[in-house]
Length: 565
Image (cartoon, rainbow, N blue to C red; front, top):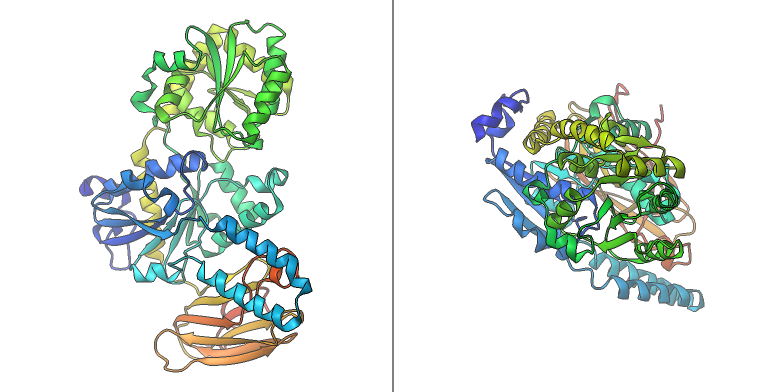
């Protein structure tokens, strides 16, 4: 197996001149965002299909999956001789209680005496610190990881000195921020901006997503590559059809179109239902129905009520979340798939339908034209008339349907080699590991310049007379009188450097450093929301306005903020 894959990856060399697959390596894979059920959409499908193939193609590499309690057991099926799970997040059973206590303290805080208020703030910070991850960023170094792979995008466990590869699935929040709460937009933006800064290499799942990431992340072209989801045949033999399933769903002997998607707003179900109603009032045969799969919830209930209001409750079905085998059977038995999504980072269901011999009509937006590439009916997802016309074509024009099936099978064939997808990722991993330490790196700063309890730096500073420069700002409204800042060198120095900044103080701190790993520890911390300063629940200390590593000649690395000349 190793000899078969080495020729594909042989162009990538580590510092010792060997192909990375010829060496043992430990790859930490952050799957903590993975949720039970279908909450992650296509990203979960991608991860669960990719990881076993990586293990098979790189038998000398060890893959350590960093998991959360809720999905740790579900991932047992991925276990292999070189794939193991490590639970790093506990069950989030205390989240609700924690939020209720948090809100109660916020309401009481304005009425407490000043000394009691400060005590509460300190206690709150300690409690939140204890509830943090049992394994922090140091986990990667303790496990001896050679690389961190973040298939869900966020580089939460990134540490200086360990290369990281991040997969960018979409930037929907940039195009449709109205579909998210303000907190979710901020969270997604922080994750994206941080990944752009911390990842050694980034992977986009489509060329559309790559161009979007380059634009919004101000990335160099070389930093991010496109590796599409080559999973068109994921449904496999399950797509042979199951008449008993269709009978259970009330679809036995009937004709229907299918839309397999979660009921997220960008999936555009409202316009699909409206367009189906327009088609039904026109030339759409009375026996043709629409099946919308997806997990039950408030959005599903809303759409079911909408169908009932339109008088289409007998023609539009909502069977709920279906297993892979059930979805495959439903797909194979359909007249066609209608996919009116407003935004896709890739669009795997389109290729799955094509591979199953099902004609497709889909949106002409974002990545879908790239994926469909002439093998589907394209329509404007904002036009009810165009969606209705596409529905009529799929349901009534056999010639069009046959042409789409032929073109679709050819298109899907180009996205069916999961092994090639995995090999492309291995090449990317090898590139990231072969780069070594090329520039200094900083981890631990929020996008708005706030810092928590620690910063981590990997200083790449060959030569002498190298200075670490940090401009630190302590706002005048924080609850503590001062903030202590301590710089620790992990090796090579027996002492630490320390400064204390008073409330309202700003200081440019310049410290001589040498090549290696540094920790900056800051205390005490506070939570703004517990101090009567807005809704911010983060644990903070001060702001970092600027950070750079400089030599006497003025050359060096700008790690944060703007250049100071």
